[in-house]
Image (cartoon, rainbow, N blue to C red; front, side):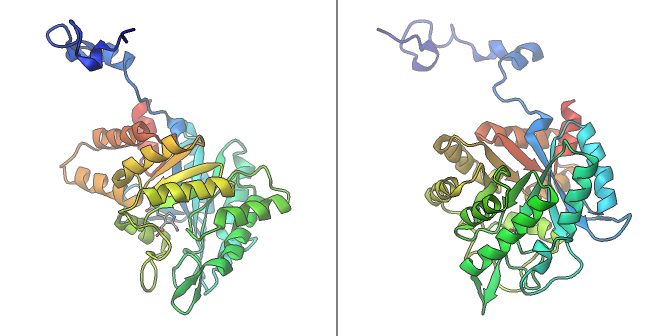
Length: 337
Ligand code: PBG
């Protein structure tokens, strides 16, 4: 039997111009809205926050207009606004006052993120508090694990990063999100959380995280640039996609509940391939450099910020992301309302 696929085959009378006119369904906003395939919602977004020490601190990040380092009290005020806009989740990064070789601040019970989580959950129990789990903001050398000479030692770093995840869960984090790209991280965290009574805490794994030039502004915001070298021995080569599928498969096997692709824009194909490969929710991180490009062009009058940002976010969702971590979240939620 013949399939009724006139629109794509073009082999049957009526299947092409002039009978077919694609413009018919584009002629009014009501029609366009009716046939729209991808719709953004504020619930799709996770808003990253940089929490620093002090009281009443709002320190703007130069390369990320609209983003500031916030002390815990200011983080609470920010979250009030975030929730009012319909955004349900935040991703916390900590900026400690002191750093050392082994990133002690990352797993200190009274560390900056742990305190922020406790305060946030006490004031806003319904807020989804997600914590970035990594050592780089806490190590004096800025690498995501402990060093053996100039090498980042994989297995020794696992214990520390798992302790960090546990301390976040103990503080009340709803989801932990390891971003360190050491092999075995998800298994190590899952095992420790389960042993310590946190078998219900989900892991959002930075599964395919690339060694990207688009993290520049973040490293200013989080004060986490490596003191020497780069992260290419643990983050992925931007040229690879099959390897991303292996990374994702491994994280799923190790117990990830959500897998992430990062960055988003130069990796839309990776998002699409991952979406096809797994049944888990897929997150995409629309990173600092991607945000900064739109902001800078808009400030120069070269781009319409609203259109460019919403188009970008729509593209990330269309590619297959269920969840988008983005610094545009507050603006986008406002534009969508
Ligand atoms: C920490 C981490 C980074 C980002 C998220 N978690 C930086 C890095 O790997 O250097 C980047 C986020 C962004 O650029 O917005 N490991």
